[in-house]
Amino acid sequence: MTQFISKRDLLSWLGRLTEKHIIIAPTKVAELNLFQKVNRVEEIILDFNNTALSPKECLFPTTETLFYVEVERKDGQVELIPVTIDQKTVIFGLRPCDARGIALLDRPFLKEPADALYQQHRDKITLVGLACLTACPECFCTSMGSAPDDPSNLDILLTEVEEGYIVQIVTEKGKALLPEELLSTTQAPPPAPPSPKAVPTEGLVQRTQQVFDTPYWDRLADRCIHCNLCAYVCPTCYCFDVRDYTDKGKTERVRSWESCQSLGFTRQAGNIEPRNTKGARLRQRFAHKLLYFPKEFGALGCVGCGRCVRVCPVNIDIREIITDIQKLGAKGEA
Amino acid sequence: MKPENPFLPYLATLQNVTDLTCDVKLFTLEFNDSAVRESFDYKVGQFVFLSVFGVGESPFTFVSVPYKTGLEHAIRRVGTVSNALHELEPGAIVGVRGPFGNHFPLEEYKGKNIFIIGGGIGMAPLRPIITTVVDHREDYGDLVIINGARTPKDLVFAPEFDTWAKSPGTRLELTVDRGDENWKGRVALVPSVVSELKLSPQNAIAITCGPPIMIHFTLIELKKLGFTPNQIVTTLERKMKCGLGKCARCNVGLKYVCQDGPVFTLEQISELIEEF
Image 1 (tube, one colour):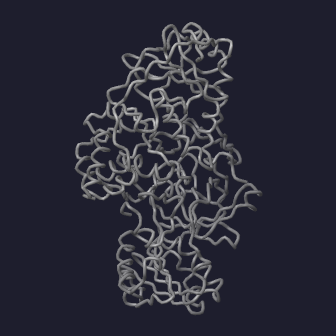
Image 2 (tube, rainbow over the protein chains, first blue to last red; image 1 turned 30 degrees about the horizontal axis):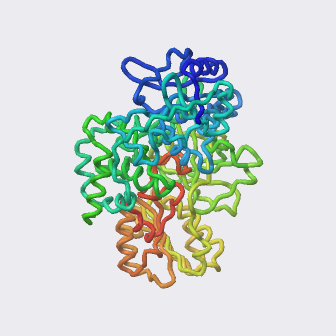
Image 3 (cartoon, each protein chain N blue to C red; image 1 turned 90 degrees about the vertical axis):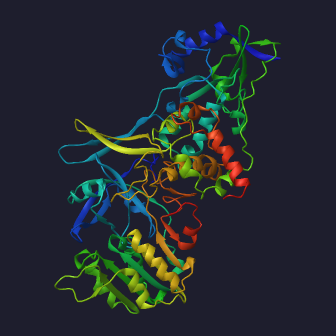
């Protein structure tokens, strides 16, 4: 016996939630499926494979003010005004892979000392996920510690069935959000989850270290055009930059997304650039996800959403790279 | 007194700004909040991010020692933030975040001969080691300081040379790439001075900091003299934005320079999988 909510009740519940919460949900923008703040539930799309971007920016915005600097003109005294996040937010309709993306972002941002802004976003966000009924051609979540029907990084997981959704309340936060009286029970069995293609991840961390110092990366990177789209669409990329901006006497310190593929990522004063080849930069991207992140945080830094595969203009494909790493490592070419 | 938001700096006021060379200034600062003044502590080799509000923040090592009052940084005018700092005058308010990073294990160096090999502004992190050894002379063995610079005018800590040289069991060797009309000392590169002095690895630790090319050849000379990788210490520098192991900018292979460094032995460096 499982819990059930009708589509109508679900939509009216979401409608009521907009009164006290910001609702971020998949919407159609031009031809793209994108997470956006919705004012009316009619804007929410429910029939989609996955969104063009993960909801990462709800927790880690593309640019975000860390604090403001107030300078008193007369005595030159300086006051720093921290930014606080008050608004409760519900992210509705994220896929289990993107929920795992958030769980992976938690590890660097919440490790001590916790990132204050990320922590505030995180505490105020409730995650209501939608199980995948079809697999995207490029995705491989089951190889990266998740699954199309994985509830584990969500507060509530919904699975579409006829006339409504099977409801799995995963956390207390989820329980507090969705009133029990909206739920009924159903005998309907959940649909069988799709089977995304697998990539070979066994022993991958060690193999990545074995092929670290090989010409493989230079050759692969030859075709990279530094467009940084891979980092832009990635649910787990979290490198950032911090800069000051002053406008009309008001100064703010701003954090923004950065990519290890961009020129200047490691450039120091005096024009010293330690990671100064395309091969070394491309290797940083994959070594971070497949070697450094696992060594530090105990999990591969990829969720298998397939977005980087989809958007790369020169077909650099993490699935092929993982397969190559396994072959090169096994052959002892390292 | 740790701020809840690790990106929020403490406010501090510049007390003194002194020219050390034509492009290096010594900055002395004091925290505005008396509670921070009392609780703030650091170790030799650690660094802080200094903010010039409206310009940005960058990491700088301490040249002062924690057992004396006064926080000092010797900063060369090279990048955006260091140029902005050079424009400031006493009384200006800056931001300070930190301290971050590991430190020189000075307790472990006790009883050993200490060889300090520095070039240019690379003397900055080495100066508090020298101060500590000179102030606690009986705790350490011989002290040899090899300090190189482009020209005599670029020797950053020249006003202290007399104090250092007069300290018992201490030898100060100065060298420049190009002399001037008053220079009577050496004109030689730092690595060749290391080789010429035939420093003995017996019960010794060699600490070097300077331009990458100087470090490269100094390491070669030290190895030739028989120094083992765990007797050679240097500091690494990387672009960094947080100091907390979060921005993922400063890693060299598996290590973050901001947390695992900046101080590394040559042994630790040889274990880094990415070339440093």
